[in-house]
Picture 1: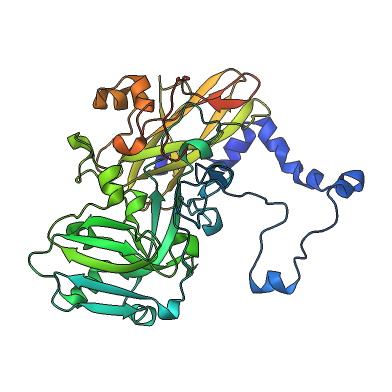
Picture 2 (picture 1 turned 180 degrees about the horizontal axis):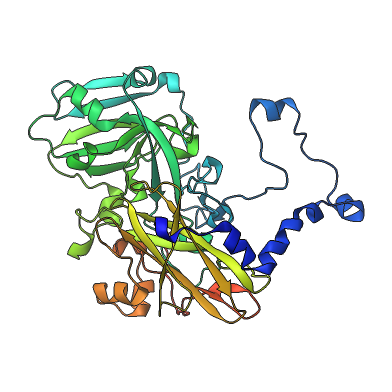
Length: 435
């Protein structure tokens, strides 16, 4: 990549419109009638609350986007209490780490438990030599690691009806997780020869459980108590959650209270009713997410104000390891150029990419594709449908979890007036388990 580094000086010189923005920030200060329209100051940046727990600027108002049938305005389909799902506002983020308050959360049919960490513990039992129960204080006495990993719901997929990148890919986020490698705890209890799987169970009202291969558990799975430098928050599993890098988000069991070592997978409700089908392509050996990427800027509902130099930016990731390369097309996939990778490229984490682009003011179709370290290349929509032997209508008429990982390319269409819209062709039906 060193030979392709972009010259910042040359980039700014090449686009007068961009260079002109250097003088723009002072003009953003509001005064007179415009300031009055904003109303009185809402926050005091010098008050005690700001000192004790820092706040963002009052001019930054980005929030998660509530979604799905769990929304309070729609009929409740499970027992109370209930919590809405919320998507990550990808288009408004920078870098690769998702702020915890903006990290997506999936719907919790039985609500979020209020757990006193002093009373919580983790039991490890089953096919082990020494069944043990660990308190939170005891877990903190073990060696720990901090690792950046993405989490993504199997419900993520490109959607011809979505208007924004939050609507197509907002069911994911990337955090720095801190905790004890599960391998350390399994070494403490002693794994017996007959064990080949673990069953992880949460403390929520539904006692959510998932089966994970022992080989994966011994590889890179974490028992996490920290997220982005602070304790894991309640909607992310406080005080403990399992982090299973590269696997479907639902395997990252929240409010973790028990791990049982067993000789085979014991299918839970989620696995039996939604995640296994007669097609061998969706069987138990297909957990790892393949290579994926999406352009976040410019993307749906954004507006290019002028022609000239712009920067196309987005995120790439893979459950198979590191991102090797990201390519960007501005002509709907006819040709591609290699993008720059910004910052560290970490395994099973978001990687930020960018590509300088001179927009001539005409129509353009922007899209990206990711190649991971396994040599896997992100497919097009047509390639994905052909793999499953489906028509395009059948592709979008099938629930995501019955297809596997829906990682085909998401294009964005730039009109001559600069308006950016979804570049996928319309379709009659789009089935979404979270809709």
